[in-house]
Image 1 (spheres, rainbow, N blue to C red):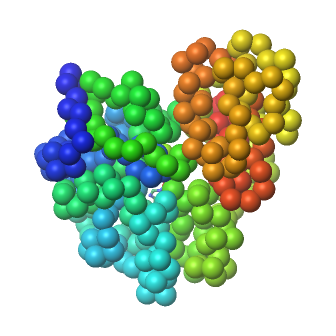
Image 2: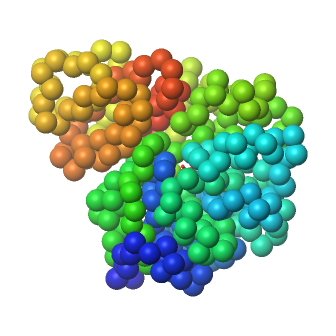
Length: 309
Ligand code: TXA
Ligand code: MG
């Protein structure tokens, strides 16, 4: 494939979705690589473009709960909570109820209603759920800036829908509602404290707890080429091949990023990783996030990025 159409028109982009093509588009969390979730071949294209293992399912993006209820069973006891939290940076794992839907062989599907205007308009104009993983190549940092999206996918995807860059910067919180106890499979903008108001008794999945205790046991994810270190205090006297991101650092250089809050940390992290790779940085030092909002999600992404296997 050689030419990528770049458009700010959700209607135009939807014609590619309905034609079995792949469209890169913005959401409020990170950029996504989307295809019709009713088109198995189009979904397979996403896997080959990303180099993604075939057993890792895709999130299905819908524009409202009416559309969601055509494809997934909505648990009655959680319905009000799900409605209150959406559109927004959260994905619910539900039982699948439509056989046409792509689900990587599982009986469940991840359903997300994004709150980015362009994403919602794209889904509405398409009239079908859009299966979309984050727009990075498998194992690499997610994409949160249009320039990074273009440098990765121009000439490789059929269409890029433009719009505001993601305002959050880390992927959605994934909540599994298919079991008796609601579980967070991936932390994000919403913390377990935020969500316990909506889903009493919600817990982090055991894998997440084990992973946090033993950061050496995970597979590679979100990783730049540079080695990533998570530290309490950032080192001083950086050399040209070192870059730092955090709240307090001595003599910040052009390659460093000084932050004011965890929210800013979330928004900047992946773009920072990609910039470091462009500039040939060898070692990236990330300061521990602050306690509170975003802490669990930032720790999760940085610890995974810090794993080199
Ligand atoms: O913010 C986001 O969620 C972004 C934007 C584009 O919406 N998407 C995203 O997709 O992060 P992806 O594919 O990078 O991550 C989806 C995560 C994976 O960890 C996947 O295993 C999990 O959701 N997932 C999807 N469907 C699932 C299912 N049926 N059961 C369990 N986990 C599921
Ligand atoms: Mg991803």
